[in-house]
Image 1 (cartoon, rainbow, N blue to C red):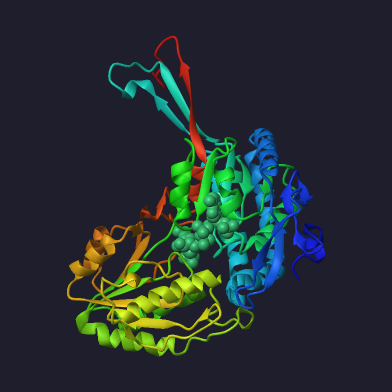
Image 2: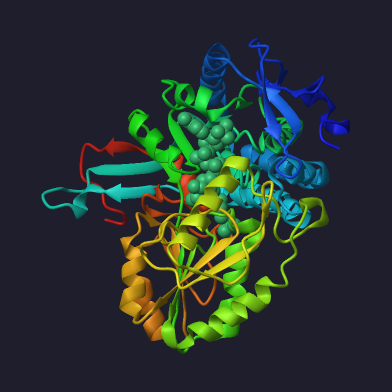
Length: 496
Ligand SMILES: NC(=O)C1=CN([C@@H]2O[C@H](COP(=O)(O)OP(=O)(O)OC[C@H]3O[C@@H](n4cnc5c(N)ncnc54)[C@H](OP(=O)(O)O)[C@@H]3O)[C@@H](O)[C@H]2O)C=CC1
Ligand SMILES: O=C(O)C(O)COP(=O)(O)O
């Protein structure tokens, strides 16, 4: 159970503590932030509302801890990460239970998130040892006018303090996808978890604590993003921000100082289906891609663009599968579970109402109880409807019937988002041309969008992000190149 056994020390009364100076602390604010269970809509947990002074202390100690961590051999950093990964996986049950209660993630998916996170940490340790152990040698005589009197050695050095801010939908996985690369590269980390999901994240942090990382290297401050977010992201002690979330990321990028930013923001992932597509495969992917975790994934299929001639068949196949989705509590591992907050449910309802008023075809009756929204396929959606452009982050999938591939590509490219897209066709030549034409960070051919496997590059164009994630890219992004030039008194050539 959450906050018991191995995790007993992370809670005080009914409020979970924050992690700093190598131990678990109560905030001097005396205030807490409630975490509302999306299913019951009642307070499930509470976390500390950390103060600005506490953030200042954390930043100061993270700076000092980073200096000695940077001198810790790479193999030792990797060893500790492997240990943390093993402890995390060993405790998958209580952590998954938090995910079920805080963000209504279906039970099996919650366990998968924790296991995937352990695997990510281990892979990161191994990849770090490989790529950070290598540098580059440049000799001067390759540039005109130079003899070989200079040798330039390049290596990757840490940035300092990395601020990690993950979103509610993967509070563990999208936290470790920032923490592990930061640590292997020799940085210290300050984590600000999402409020919904904070308790799962605190349990995960305790696994790093148990692994024996040096004091102050990892800190986790809790509180509402709207209250401490700006103070954290504009703090002079931060040397890099790795953020995943919504439009908040755009605001952060305007306020942050001259530091590297890694931003993974929203998406309106389009799925183009051609006449020659395997429609069973396409339908299965639309349903999995559109409705898993109730559509609350940045990589969810958020609009289907299907060629008119096969639209009826595809819509029928999707509907047959939607009818089989189970709807209910996450504890029962239902396919569709309550969306994360009431305001999120209200937002989704607003998009549905707008589509109704503007004449979309409802393949199912719209049904909602509390935060629970039944899966809904909207056919004959037109570009004047909000759902054609906005991301519902909920179990509602719009279908736009298109007359040509160009119409599909134009719709996709007119979006302010550019995360992923996909195309279903049996013609690989057409698929390649469409992939090149789609203005998105990734195009999947014959599969729904997806971030994983976690070592693949993952990035968004336009308002979907800055930089690239994926294990290797994240490690590189959390380092800077340092060069040392050896100047020789006379030109020297190997075997010369
Ligand atoms: N591209 C990607 O990889 C992903 C994108 N997303 C996008 O994220 C959105 C949903 O996630 P959600 O968690 O609601 O996103 P938000 O942007 O609301 O929140 C993300 C994180 O930012 C924090 N935060 C809020 N305000 C501030 C602030 N002023 N300064 C710093 N941090 C702040 C939140 O904390 P708190 O919870 O306390 O408010 C949370 O930890 C969707 O738009 C979705 O598309 C989601 C997942 C992945
Ligand atoms: O946060 C998200 O929604 C993602 O980064 C998507 O990850 P997934 O494709 O593995 O669900």
